Image 1: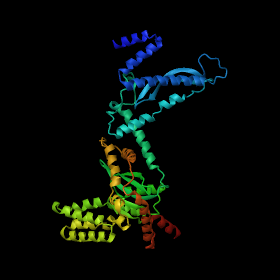
Image 2: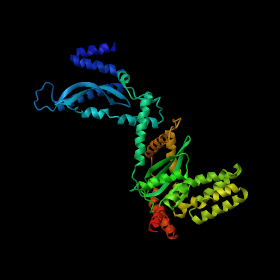
Image 3: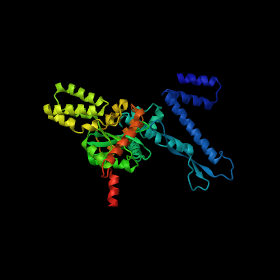
Image 4: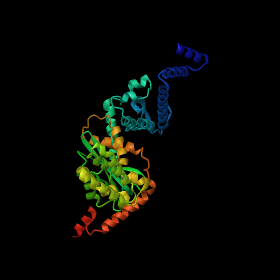
Length: 437
C-alpha cells in the first residue's frame, strides 16, 4: 500500500518514468535498512563509473573515431569486495583495437582487490569471531546482495586468514633491526597447547616498544632461544654497545643469552623469583617472606639490597632449604637495575617481565578460540598476528625519561666487564681471535 501511494505521489509530481522507477527501487532497498540502501546506491554508482571510464578509454558509443585505440567488448560477470564479502557485478570489457589484448579498467581493478576483505577477516578473527560465525557478523546489505555474496564460508574465511597472517609473520621476521638502539630487550615464551613460541620485545632509547621476532619449538629451551637471538643479530641488531636483557629466570634463556650476546647485563624477573621462593614455603610464612623480598628489591642502595637478600637466604637455608636455595640462585641478577644506578619508575618497570607478558596475554586472548594447533607454522602465524595486534596498543613504558641514562649505564657496565678479563667476551670476538690464531 505504501509503495502504491509513493508511486502515485511521484506521478502527480510529473517525474519522468525512469526517475519514478529509480525511486521505487530505492524504496524497496530501504526496507532492508539504511546500509542496504547505501550499498544499492553505491553499486549503481560503481556501474556508472565503470561505464564512464569505458567511454574515456574507447570513446562515445557510435562515434566515428579513426584513431580509436580500443573497442567495447561486451560485459561479463565480475566481483568486487564489499563489507567483508565478494559481491557479483556485471563489468564492462574493453579490448585493444587490434583485438590482441584485454584493456584493464582502473575502476574495476580498484574495487576488485581482496585486501579490504582479508583485513576485515583478520580483524574479526583476532577479535574472537570463529569461522563458523563470520558470516553472521556482516552488516545487513540487502537480500539481493546477500544472496549472491561469496567468500563468507568457513573454508573461504580460513584461507583468507591463513594468507593474511602468513604475510604478517613474514613481515615481522624480516624487519630490519640495524637502526634500532635498544636500552632493554625482554625474552619470554608462550605455551600454545603443547607448542611453544619464544618471543622477543625490544625497548628503544626513544621509549618505543618494538616486537623483534619469535621462534617456534617444543619447549622454552636454550636451542630455540639461541636460534631466535642469532636471527636478531643476522637482521642487524647491535648489542655491542650493551643492552639490559630481562628474563623470567629460566636457566635455558640465560644460557642462550650468554652464548649469543656474551656478558651483557641481565635482570631476572623479581616476580618470578618471588613465586619460586614462596612455593617452597608453608602458607603461614609466605606473607612475611614476600614483604622482606619486596622491601629489599625496592631499596635504591645496591649493597644494602643485596645484603638483605643474602641474610634472608641464609635464614631460609636453615628453616626451608628449598626456598633458601631458590632465593640464592641468580640473586644478584634480580638487582641489576639497582646496581646500574637506575631507580624510580623505570627500575620498577625493568625489574619484571610485565611488559612482554602483557603482549603475550594479548596473543593468548586473540587465539583463545583455537582448539587444535595443527603445526608449527600455525603456531607462528597466530602468535605473529597477536603480537602485531598488541603493537597497536603499545604505550611508552613507565619511567621512559631515564632510558638514555640506562643505555649509558649498560654501556659502561659492558666496557668494565670486558676490561676485567683477557678472554674474548663475545662470540664475535672469539671467532676473530680463532681466525688470527
